[in-house]
Image (cartoon, rainbow, N blue to C red; front, side, top):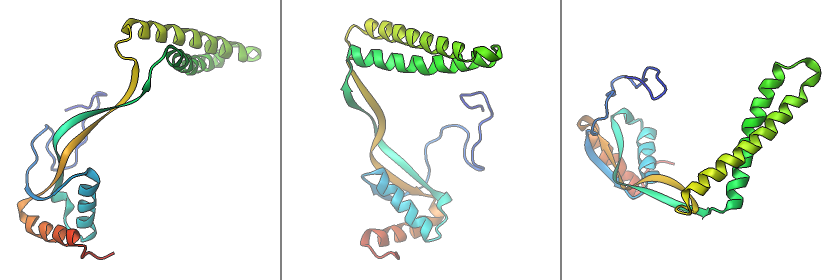
Length: 172
C-alpha cells in the first residue's frame, strides 16, 4: 500500500491497512468530538489501555460555512498576491544563477511577471464561473454524534470509568 505521494504507507502495528468498519462495544456516546476526546483522555488519565478505544463519528455530514462575498476586487487582489509570491520565488531562483552584479533584476522581473500572470489567471478563472459561485467558504466534515467504542476485553471497565466522569467523580 502506498500514500498519495507514492511512498510506503505507515500504519501503527496491528492496525488494518485497508479501510475497515470499527469494532468494539459502545461505552459512550457524545454530542461533540470535544466531549468524546475528553472521555478518552479521562480513560488515559486512569491508566486505561486506550489502544482498545476508538472514536467513531456517526451520521456524517459536510458543512460548508460561507465566509464572505466574492467580488472582482477580491479575486484580482488574491490573484496578484499569489502571483507575487510565486514570481518572487522564481526571481530568487533566477538571481542565484545570474552574474554577481545583477541580483535584483531577476527578482524584480520575476515579481512583476508573477503579479501579471496571477492577475490574468485569477480573472480568467473567475470570469469563466459567470457568477455561479460569488462567495468564499470553508468546508468541514462533522458528525451528528461521536460514539466511543472499546474492545470487549476492557469494555466494562471503560463504562465504569466513563460513568464516574459523567457523575463528576473523577480525580482532578
